[in-house]
Image (cartoon, rainbow, N blue to C red):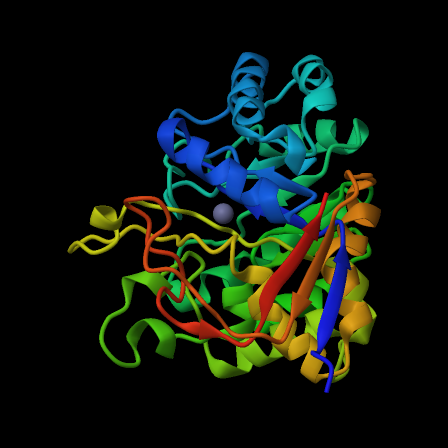
Length: 346
Ligand SMILES: [Zn+2]
């Protein structure tokens, strides 16, 4: 019997964190090895706030790419109120989107703002005019399990006020958020493997597991199922399947910042995501949709043409390493995955 196989062309990770310094030098080559392109988030310390910051970050990322990997990095800038058209015109050639962080809701978001701050609407209006998409970490104040839902009214307000602004709801985690994709033509979303495959039990259902702790936090089984169905385009959600893109939200922290009393949110997962999601798509007979979710949809939504890269996945077991580099524990460390990457042609 021949091995079951999926061949992906130009897979893209539209949301990841490479960090800075030594961590960046470790993370960029891992993205570059298996993806044709990936979009790095701007919540560095300090954040990417200016044209100079973007150019400096670009230099650091590009210096870390191995030429033979044939990889296109994409960049973002950190949202600020009152961004002028002059500033936006200057940065536009270097970025794909601008990332909105609600103040204090995730890693390095203390530089973010409230959606109600003066100057937020002016920035969004200028972005709409200059056709720069808004990537949004959509969480409002309130109980952690309801924060994304509570941000829904902000998404509705922005999508209505700025109908030509592409709004990307990053790493959606709540089944109610999916309805915004149905309702507004200018709303899109990224989905992580963790929100499509796991629920809060993975963090709290047995021993406390800091390596399954992200923001937005994992939610109920019904949320996970609805998100998985949406990316596969089944169970009444086929109408939004072209609006969903893979964004791993791979977010490494050194192990001492995870396994401590105040564990940081975010886990490295870029190297296992394609293998992990191969199973549900293949088993549901949705391989064509897997190709759209991991590449075609992002190309269409962002209007990008990444370099050519073919990634072959086969149903052959692979074990997730205990460590990536010296300090990073990857998601599902030590677990056996049903699928492996068996060939990459760049
Ligand atoms: Zn993120």
